[in-house]
Image 1 (cartoon, helix red, strand yellow):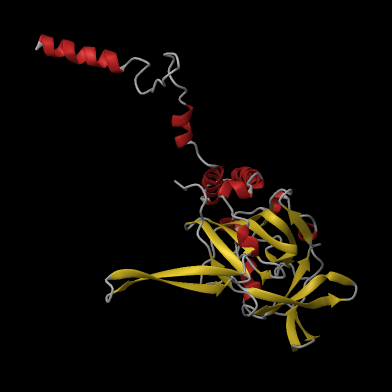
Image 2 (cartoon, protein in one colour):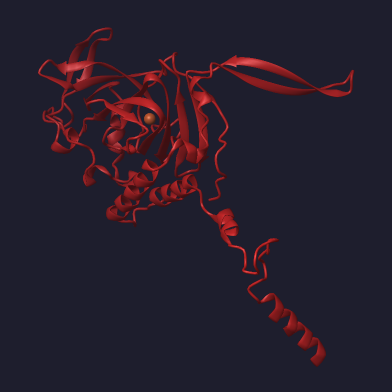
Length: 342
Ligand SMILES: [Fe+2]
């Protein structure tokens, strides 16, 4: 028994030396090889770090403080700002590809072999590459081909972050005017609705609001605008119910390239936007939390700008809910970047 114990401790002492696990390369001295290679296999990729931070940010509950959310959101914004097309292995040919090849495999019983059918399909105006999605967050890349755009759409009760990866984007944003911020109320205490004659739509009822509050008209990067979704009253979605024309404040369009930091929207500020490419195709990383919820008010809805409410203030616009425009449809491409392990 004593002899067996001695052998066991001898083995332990041997494998415990610093040489264990290191490969000594020919021609080098006996110094252990640098463990860099081993560390690299365990390193978190930049995109994986972004996803982890997004999950941390959007997994808040009502027990979390707004301050904590804002701290996590700022960190996420900073990380997304540093993402480049190389970090997700984005392939530039996707920007200009007009036709894509699809292969379908089938067994040929006559020759007892596998045959390949090759199809060529025109690319959609927009290609989507999904990187990650769960119940908290969606990350993906939109590729907008030259001359195309994402129509005006909303992000109900969501935060969204955009980082341009290639080309130049023009983003036209709107903030819905708070229906509770009405200056005129009828006798029942509800919103005072007026009829407006809108070209192409006829007489349309629109709730009247008093002038925008300072936060609605200013830059949205204020703490009060960064409410986590769970803190937002559901009433901020009332513009999606009746009537189907509502008022929104338009913000000056932003021109963004890959040199620019990421920009964001909140459940209240700049929540509606139209995204077009300028002078050629473009691609951007899109981070939204929480994801859309189909067949609810938190689904994606499309709108058109039907003009200003009055000549005195052209930034207050009338928006009209529409079905998805026929010019907009997407196809998909597989994500080929670093593996995501979360
Ligand atoms: Fe969007």
